[in-house]
Length: 75
Image 1 (cartoon, rainbow, N blue to C red):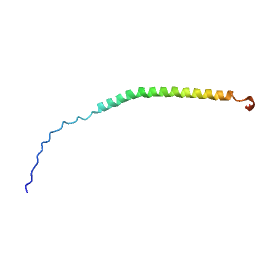
Image 2: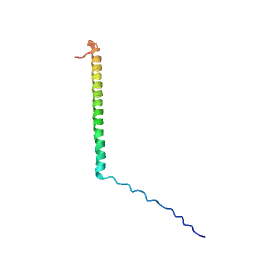
Image 3: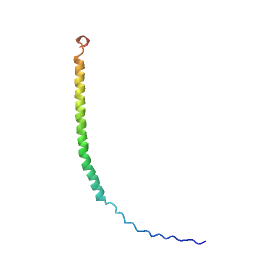
Image 4: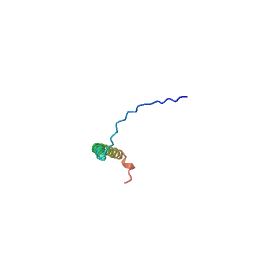
């Protein structure tokens, strides 16, 4: 039996340049610059919704207290 050799030419692939340390820091800084205003905006919106909900709950509680009969008050 004869063995056949199959020769394939392998083309050298282009080397992938590794990211330098400064490029990765620049990427993180970019993410940070974008994330900070988003977090601040969401915090402001959440705080405003919290204040509105608290205000409405206080009003509802006062309205319930005002509708209590004077005979039911224990003061």
